[in-house]
Length: 554
Image (cartoon, rainbow, N blue to C red):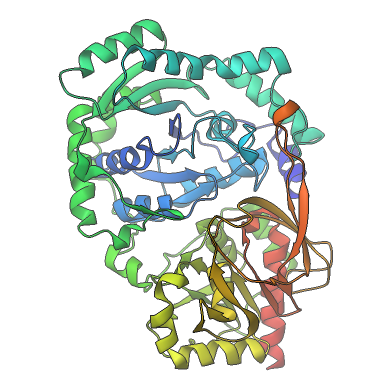
C-alpha cells in the first residue's frame, strides 16, 4: 500500500522529505459560518498584494471554498483530507503542491469547527488533525457579535479540549481505521512530538469577526489575559455587505457573485487595516518586512484568468512530476502516450460542471494524460481525438434547461459512452448521463430521473469497494471519496459496496453502514460519490491504461 511505502521513506526525514520546510498557517473557527472563507480571501489578497508566493488549501472535501481562493490568487487551490489519505501521503501531497507552485507560504482554510471530524462525533479528518499532521500553527476566527468575556471561556475551552481528551483517552483516538502498524506508530510520534514545538499544531492566534472598533481593544485585552499564549491579531468590523450568499450545498460559487473582485478587494483592504500582519507572519516563523520587501524581485507566477475560469476555458499550466508515486506509475507504463502523443482526456469544465479535485488533475497529468477541457453548456460536440472522458460534478440542476438546449452535445456524449469511450462520471456528471433531471431530458445513457429531495442524501465520507472488474481496476479495488448532494434516483447502480465508516467512541459512536451503488463496466464508472484518487492512484492509472488500449483498438 502507498501509505506504508511512504512511511518507510519518510522515517529518516520526517520533517522535510522534500528538503525544505514551508511556512504555514491554518485558519480555523469554532463552527461553520464564523467567517473563515472571508478572512482567508482577505489574507490571500494581502499576501498576493505584497508579492508573497502563497499556496492555498482547504481542509476536507469541499470544492467551493477552493474556488474562492483561486479567484483571489489566480492559481488553483488544493484539498487536504486525512480521511482520503493517511498522514505521510497528506504531507507528501502538501509538500509537492508547495514545490510545484514555487510557493513559500501556505494558507490553509479549516472545515466546520476546529475539532469537527468524521461522522460529527470524532476529530478524525478535522482541521485540528490536519494541523497536527502538518505541524501548522492555527489562527481561530471567532464571531464575537453579542459576546464579551464568554469569548474567553470559548477560546480557553478550545485550547484545552484536546489536552483533556489525551489525558482521559490517550494520544489520538481509539479505533482509528486509517492508521495501522507502522503508520499508527509514526502518527502517534508526530502528534506527541508536535506538542514540543513552540507553536506548531496548536492554537496561537485569534482574528475576531463582527466586532466594533470601540470594543475591540477591550475584548483583545480580555482574551489575552484569560488565554495566555494566544495573540489577538486583529478583527473584522460588522459590515453586512461582506456577507457571502449561500445555497443548499454551501456558499454559492464566486463566479456567480456579482462584483466579486470588488468584494475581495474590499475585504483585503479592511483586513490589512485591522490585522497585524507582522505578528501573523511571525507566528509562522517569518519576518513580514523582509518577506514583503521581496515583492519587486518575485517572478510572475503562472495564473488562470478569472473570467476564463468561470466559462470553463481554462488551460492548465505546465506541470512537472513531483510525486514519486506518479513517477513509479509512469515507469510501470513507459508507453503511457499513444504513439507520439499522451492519452487525451476530455474533462467537463464550465458553470454546470466544475467540481474536480486539483490533486486528481495533477495526478492525471503526472501519469501522462493531457487534459482537454470542454463545456457541455457551451460547446456543440466533444473535442476530437480524445481517448477518455471525465464528467465532473457540479450544479447541472441549475442549468438543466440550458443543457437540454445543447442537444448536439448531449448526443455526442451519449454516442461516445455507448461506443465505449472510457468514462468517469461523478455526481453532477452522473446525473448528466441519466434520462433526465427533474423531468428535463439529459443524455439518456443510464436509466433514471434525478429528483431533488428534502434533505442531503447519503451525506458524508464513503469508501467504495468494486464488485467486478472495471475501468477502475480488478474486483476489490478500494477508493475513498465523499457524497454531498440533494438529488437522488430510485436506482444508482449496484457494482460497488459503499461504506460509511464508523466514528467516535462511547455513547456518541456511530457504526459503519454499507449500501450498494455506482454503475461499473470495463469502460464506465458512474455514480454519486466524488473520489479522491490519491486514496488509490492505481485506479486512475488503470483508467488511463484502458483509455490507451481503447484508442489503439479504434
